[in-house]
Length: 467
Image 1 (cartoon, rainbow, N blue to C red):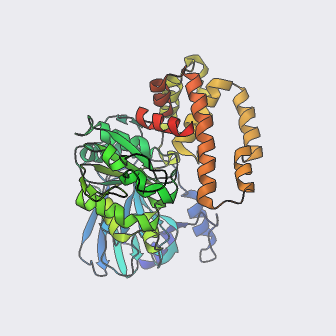
Image 2: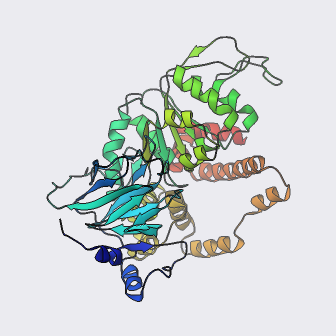
Image 3: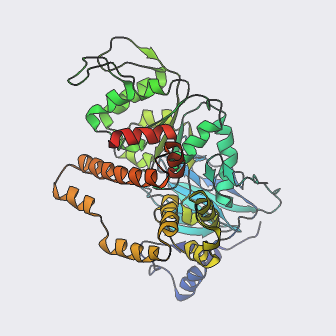
């Protein structure tokens, strides 16, 4: 291992603070120039690294990082972190680390005590051989493993419905294949629009339960007062309006998979009942007096950081650990190098665009966009371009200028509680979206569902709710 002095390591640390966009006064001009030259640029992972714990409760342990790991590896106290540390000064989910060319990139995840590189506090930074990383009272020495064998990634460009040929996605496919063949609960995390529901359905369709039902329950689309009835069903006469016995989502998913979408929004009072149903494999309908056995594989999806939700008291710790037996974090589209082109071509083809109209200039322009709405935004952009051609740019500019639609403004003017307001906006959007996609496919539900990227059963449920 190359020897470095303390002063060398201090000067070679490369912190970067995206919130400020500049480097603080602790750096001299040479260091600022060094940081600016090393701002994040796409590069292929190369080789492997070892993190050796030199100080703290885990001193003597080591952790290996190579292409066999997910794109981002979490460090923290919880069992769901790939690098689990016993240090009480380390947060539940303290930081994330990933391969970035011939270096590592560390990102603090809002930890309580901060993340330090060579004793310098950082939000994000690159790490090289010989660097020191500090989390709480734990110190880890970064060592490059040049003699490590090359890890061969799957050559696949998709996992079921999940499409992506980037290195970031291919590093997930091997894990997805193993999880599809198991029955353990899975939590899928990621920003809005990254394809969490698509991956959940792919896990179902590629697994042993593929012949069983696939059912989706969206925690944001149901008022809190009826969530229990929706999940567990109710008996006739259980409450006003219960004119008939009804099976809930758990019973509907018997023998298959139940996706609980946006689990982080589930009302705290209902979480113990969900935990009991998952642990015991049985439910009790509202107004019922008997337990009903259910055989259901649970997949949960969330855009929220559940570790932070637990710390804030908004999500039960025991439910979190029961759900997060396995955990998949979907990278945002901006981090999936090359996938904008792959996905744009796929959407262009499936949506019926003329091949000659998808020009290299158009694709290059899309590659340079930040895509805050991720894959969903890209798909909508492709659909708009096919429908409007060159006018799509004008429509986009007008939409950006108005920022919000009339429906949103109308709902805001009502001064409703957040949950009710959000539900009304979502319902209005669903009605318009379904009308548009059905009209485009001559009211063929199967084709409309496929074009929408959701299951036919879920599409029909949305359609029924919109009527």
